[in-house]
Image (cartoon, rainbow, N blue to C red; front, side, top):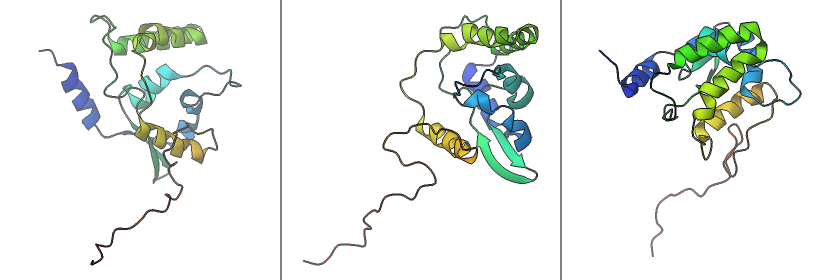
Length: 170
């Protein structure tokens, strides 16, 4: 019995987020932020296989027993993989990328780029709620924030707003 894509995604999204400690998460920070001076290979396959267990999964980060934040998924539910042949299995691509990265660090990243990322259609903008969640994480580690335009950055007080307290009588 074959499971439809939407059904599989619903099951994945219903799973509770994987939980990791902050010390482990810090190893993966270069994966999530562009840092031109960083020459270390980005552990995309490691994150998906060893931590998140799915590119659609969120990961809850803790410091001991204290909850800190939830890392958004690498792929959003509405990412379209239409340009990928139906015989391509995302988990197989990630597993092959991990094996290739064990041989040479850039081979795994190149494999994921060639078989998945380059086939995603261009997205016009980043999901604002995801960008704001990332900004909260980046703020914690003093990293460059994602520009969000006119939207307030999470954590800053909102601009003063008029409060409706009813109509005055004429």
